[in-house]
Amino acid sequence: MSCDFLTLAVDGVRLLQPYEPGKPIETLERELGIRDSLKLASNENPLGPSPLAMAAMQRQLGKISVYPDGNGFALKAVLADYHRVGRECVTLGNGSNEILELVARAFLRPALNAVFSRHAFAVYSIVVQAVGATARVAQPNAPEHAMPFGHNLQALGKLVDGETRVVFVANPNNPTGTWINGAQLRQFIRELPATTLVVVDEAYFEYVQASDYPNAVAWLAEFPNLIVTRTFSKVYGLAGLRIGYGLSHPAVADLLNRVRQPFNTSSVAQAAALAALDDAGHVARSREMNNAGLVQFAGAFEARGLSFIPSVGNFICVDVGRDASAVYQALLREGVIVRPVASYELPEYLRVTIGREDQNRRVIDALDKVLSP
Ligand SMILES: *Cc1c(COP(=O)(O)O)cnc(C)c1O
Image (cartoon, rainbow, N blue to C red; front, side, top):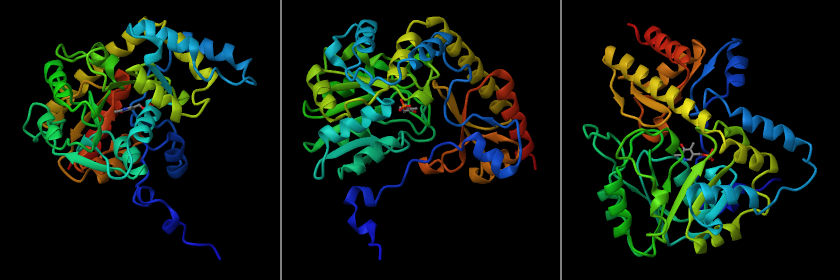
């Protein structure tokens, strides 16, 4: 007789809800027996990766029988140069999600807490709960705020106490797309206790055009308790490869490196990331296409009287004015996969990843069809 494994699991794990990823195209097409569907649900780059990254991966495949450089010497050196920090400040991760997990494992435990905002990126609560620490969830900005549902730094700060080891701030946040300006974020970090680490998650950094949007990497020398995370999953178009990194004080990086697996990033991923950093043109083209798409969606939503959350990411949340799960399902039948965000406590919103012009048009046409009375 098998035993009740649920009772054996540690407290934090027993209460966890698994992360809900966007529906894969193959799954939808299998379920509905359709083809040519479109997925704009997981904030992937519609241009794909740089050709330089593709070529680097291909070259690396010939050496796949050999373990990767566990310390990622070459990639760390280039990242350190790129960001003008010491090599010992860099931690490579299997996606930047792994960095978030390493922070939780290195610094949190039961009786300690982590602070983040309601509607913040789902992985924060998962990594905090998994190690049995307490998640303190701050009230977000009000719906009528200029950054509706975004992080409210005052509310976050009020939840911080002597047992708070980590504060997670996504800038911009996913799924809201809202951001925090440089002056306010810097002041917030300055006022944190020295014993509280702050993770500034900049997964969408390269996309952001807002003039008051900060590069938190510039503050690393000033704040030893700051960890900035970046990823190759978004603008670099390498989500399937799983590579991201953290930048921090060397003492913090040393601790993160103690808990990671020895070969947490693959040799192919390291090679691709290195090459991707060389293709500034690809990043610029991706950013331009994204900006055009943000404008396209905003215009279309306005024309239809649909409110939306202003976004600087490669996605935008639209208020469909009713339970969004039915709209999501109806869009699936049109072969269009977007992301319902009820699990983020935004039950009347859908998050749409910005695609190419024709892809965005298809989403808008499908929305017209399913929202028409
Ligand atoms: C997509 C995303 C990430 C990146 O995850 P990876 O593990 O690097 O693929 C991190 N933070 C936020 C807020 C995101 O939306």
